[in-house]
Image: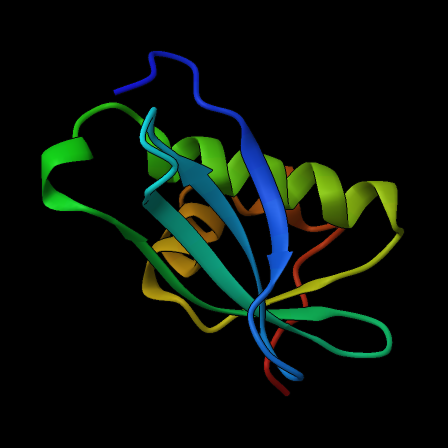
Length: 102
């Protein structure tokens, strides 16, 4: 397992994209799936495989997503429970990118 795996964005299908982390065998060990909209992304799922848990991979995916959104002057609709909980832990830190479900 890589100590500092690279996070890569990839298109899953016509509607979904993801930030993914690969291990040394080029197997996905973590992913954060989102739907790209015109002015925001809706993050719908974050998962790390059991054998890779405890290595802060979910946090690395979260940080990559936040950086991406800020670089693109976009917003995040946090439908994923993990992302929503991270936003709720420190709402002021993410108020610039948090799209609330109206």
